[in-house]
Amino acid sequence: MKIYSVMDPEFKPYGQILEGYDTRQLLEAMKAIAMPQSGTAYEPSIAALEACGIFAQMQDNVYGGMPVQLGMCWGYNTKLNCLEYHRDSEVNVGTGDFVLLLALREEIEGGRLDTSKVKAFRAPAGVAVEVYATALHYAPCHLSAEEGFRVAVVLPKGTNTDKPAIVNKNAEDALLWARNKWLLAHPESSEAAEGAWIGLVGENVDIAG
Image (cartoon, rainbow, N blue to C red; front, side):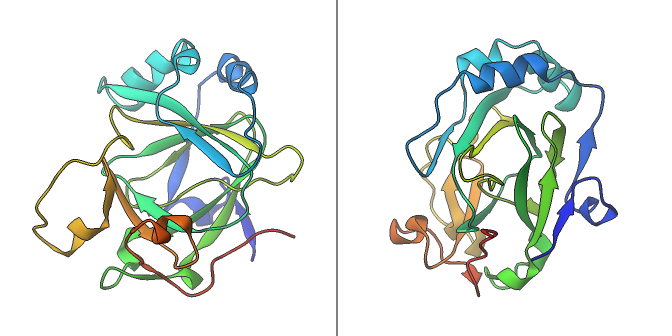
């Protein structure tokens, strides 16, 4: 699989680089959080990260004053496993370079997406990357099996918390997996085993090697 850069023109349909932000304090706070023994961890809101000055800048400048949360996804991963989308953009900042596996919502057909549509993008350490609401994404991938990845995640407040109780009104409602989180799972994923909508068809993309 070819790995593009988020600086390449191929990234334009999926997101953009947010310029003008000093991420150094945030990166140091992220590095202070211990890595998991294996797999990945995710916390939607982490007080130590939200104490950084960039939190208010993200809330006021990037999200126009809407309430947001600043958490982190971290650990070890090289596989696609799932793709998700939100009704809003997500901002990512990594302590080291990392890879995002992305597709477009418009490529979903009948609640399913062929994984051959997925593209890989490498994001540089310390750069704020906006992933548009129309871009499908999931856990970042590491480039070093020893170091893993630490990626800050900025989203509207409440996203990825408990799923609201709903009565399904349409086919999309079957994809709702958590608050403001619509999920398509690959059959091989743990999420599929837990009952998530199996919406990824084809190879479970793996960038290892």
